[in-house]
Length: 217
Image 1 (cartoon, rainbow, N blue to C red):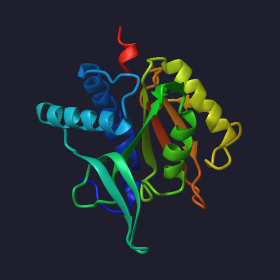
Image 2: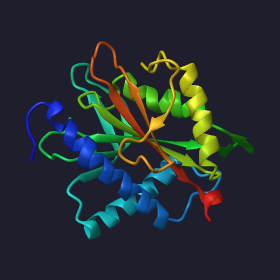
Image 3: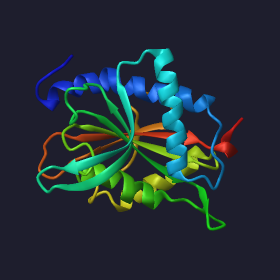
Image 4: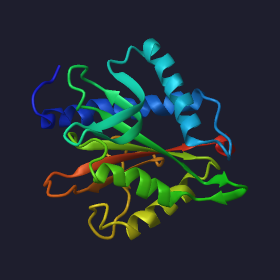
């Protein structure tokens, strides 16, 4: 197992862990009952976690999956965030992990359909950029539960919000999605690059848009 500084894990994350995790999530999602238009993201994420955990034994995957893992700032002695899904490749270093934050998109809220793209950006992506999630690694993930199944439409709305928040997100103008470096032929997978504070190395967020009930074929 890799040891040492977190930078030593970069190649492993990009070449092994992240492609495996994203493929596993997609295959698991395909077998699950899809969420309806009013489903809550906490309920969806819990069902996804249970399905991932059940399938993990069959697939003999060499990582630990945790649900709603708490991020704590030891210096400030306070909770800074609660991460939906976290993948730990090294059980001896809890600071090394691949975090997946999840948000609903194109959902019905109080009887009205809402894009929720602003929440995806401000309450999801921004937490990685601010260092509330994944402060010691250079990769994070976003799951977009597209409850009406219109992935292209949902991704376009998210990208519009990214553009308006590009500076705050530490992104180069104009701020847009890039093709996924680990799933280049998958139109439901995207990638964004960010600078966090004074860090010179880019932080990469891998985005995966998953179809809800209305998107079943």
